[in-house]
Image (cartoon, rainbow, N blue to C red; front, side):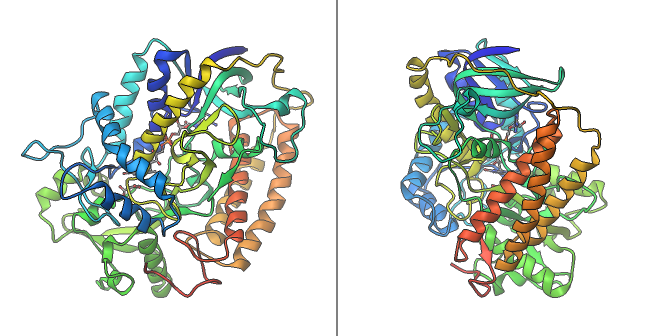
Length: 524
Ligand code: FAD
Ligand code: SIN
């Protein structure tokens, strides 16, 4: 099947849906997601969305906190732009029907998280992302120009490569004409032509064994842009959340929000020691990379599989009111968080890098924009400040939409695009070839490219991944496309990029910590 739309949006999280809503009055929009539209990282966000709301907070403080958390690798002009656009985009979310909690005085109840010098996290209890996703879904479903398809899995974007022009070398005139989308019902690959394509495919958490990310986070958009010779950057900066619930049988790992530490939660070892002050005077509220590394170090030194977060000293009713999702989840597992310490372990959580975009959300590929976690805007630098990602996604979706609206007026559909070529392929009979390789990728990334890295571990990871890459490309060339096979291929691509960029960075910086270039540097 072939189809033409003005705007093709790949991904239905906060970035994709807010972009769709902003462009929909200007043309026909197709939003695709590879599974139910609500199954996104966005829906899992707990803590909230950061924005300057009231005095004594101000833009300069939010900018400074973002720069410090990012180990001063963030682009200051980008940080300023995102922070200063925050309040308008929060208002937009509220206008679209998002409910943020209010205090008794009717002002928004603001939380504080690690690395923030002020209370500035708007939230809806401890399930903010779910509330944002709910409001956005309601809006897009009611817009006559927006079509939603949750059966479409994007396989690759269409470029000159598919017109027979082989683009082996990097060039700056690559154009995106739409995408090849696998219809998971018919098992056929459809050709969707678009004047503008937005990549909003989210993160890469599933390349690790332990992750807070739902299974959709397999780095598809980044891998597609990389295969199309787009510029990808900062992939070495993978953020591990310090506190996911220790429950080895569960995937994704359930998050214990950082807001709990903002609320007064304390990190403890089994013997009760409050170890964080040894690493940083901000204690349990130090930036996330520092806390995750400290926990990793304590676990290695004590041989424990997990440490603890303690909120038992707080008022029980207040704890239940602020964190009902976490309270109920833990209770199901026999942990009453008002009386028991919560067992926690770090988990892969967020990717700071991705598809490089400029201040208008444009990637290096013409007519291809990127927003949200799959993009690299320059906001996060070497480490993201908590709750800055929902903010970045909505602000950059807005920048991209404004530019894309102007763009479609001057853009024609590309003609003569061939259909997907699956000549000579057949169904891969042995699923084990995919599932086993998947496990290997997760093991390689977790054991060699985790919180603490070294040259030796990275080299091992690269050697092993290269072998897996060759095997999987050969399987891909001979097989009819399936979602599982494509996801594996994408995970290998983004794992490879993470390793190569980690090897290229010759210093410890933010989330990239290597034992070869630094003694345990925790403070900045
Ligand atoms: P997502 O919301 O992940 O959406 C990705 C979409 O892309 C999905 O619809 C998926 O189906 C689709 N997709 C992917 N690949 C394909 C493909 N090949 N074909 C078709 N569709 C595809 N950030 C904060 O700022 N504050 C928080 O409190 C917070 N808490 C978090 C808690 C958890 C547990 C997690 C996992 C993350 C949290 N984050 C938080 C991070 C934040 O939620 C994400 O960075 C953000 O929601 C990403 O939004 P997105 O629109 O870029 O992608
Ligand atoms: C959390 O609630 O701790 C997650 C916040 C974030 O990832 O920004």
